[in-house]
View 1 (cartoon, rainbow over the protein chains, first blue to last red):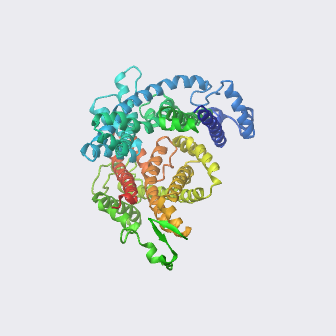
View 2: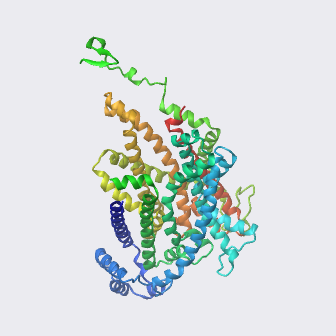
View 3: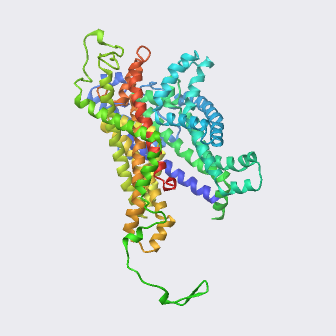
Length: 313
Length: 312
């Protein structure tokens, strides 16, 4: 198993490097006006702009730029923001933002697992009954309608019905409810639908029929066999979810004006802050690679079938 | 050839050579089984599917025919302030927006434009994906390179990729098509490759091969029909996603230019005036939801119907 983990880690490191390199090269095509603050850009002549860009190193060949970027990154220097928070260190900005996104992300993970998993189990148990159709209908709506639409309608209508604030305020806990719930809407459906499907698949297996014939109670079979095996594929996604919560939701943070990471990416794009866009995009991409890697590792650790076959091989 | 089978000596005279007959080779355990007929029969067994298909056909033909026959210009601005932000009435069925433009006309022009964009994306994505996927499934040498490419592309979160490309290229219809199709094709290709590999290794295909069926016949009779139904299903499912992405890009300020009439732009423009004139967002949104939900459901139901296991 150690051999497998080592091999898989090496593979992930290679993938991260390739992803970062690919994204960095794509970022070289960013409009150069994004390296100026708006006033600077308007006040400078064309030659002054070129000199400025040259001094920044933006006109160097992409590979040299990549080398410089990596050396700086290794020293812990993420560069400075240009237009969103002029001249501020990006690491300082991130430190402040990550907290909000992480808090909301964690809350929504707890909510979506807390509601989604029991919902999935209930749907599997009442297969083809009313409650199952209701849950499926919910999942269809959440998956096929663009999220912006239902998130926005939740914001304006639900806040009115329950008299909740429409925006996020740091010191008013009641204003935290709606964003946290909205963040969970689609993942509730995700957990419910997959758990239901895996449980139904699992229930039709031969060994479950055998366990029934042996006379085990339905409850025991569910708990000991069906649920355990059905949870495995879901476990793969958990590390990704955990890591990506700090990235926050672009739409929700913007709708509720939560000062988190997702809102930061949108404002950095709207205000054309190349340095900030670059760092954020690279962070998002690396996090998703790491998440997939950890998910694979987790499965090796929890699934005895894979664990055994890997250690033999 | 002296072998014992259940104690009986198998001698040459017990066997009789027959000529290859295409008709008899088609005979299966079930009489008159036709993959397409059964798929369609299973699909149209449910009333909801029939309703959804009719709904899609009606919505699509109306949105394509309306711009041809209507004389209302969706970009006609009115200078008369009384005609701004009106509620639905006999002249403007969905009312007018803040510049006096007719929302009914804009909704159908927008639906047509959004559908055209989504269909182009679906064709490019699924078309390229199927061709590459077929090569990938049959040419072993490609496997390592393609897998690494797949890892790189899919490891960049799709929203980040979409945002990045729209930021680099100027917002336009070509950008959105390129941004979505350039990421989507590889997932389609991987999906096709997996399907081809599993279809090819299926017992009945191996059995067929052992019985001497030529490869071309296996491909054309046993593999391609399955793939075509998968292609239809995948194309149907990319349409809601494309429309959703267009709405999302409009929201973060990287959408299509404001003078392009699309459902995404209408939803985002309507959202800005929602507090005062909710209907300006709700009418186009209702049409948008009808389209995405029906395509999503039809895609999924068709997927179920195309599985031969559900044919009996």
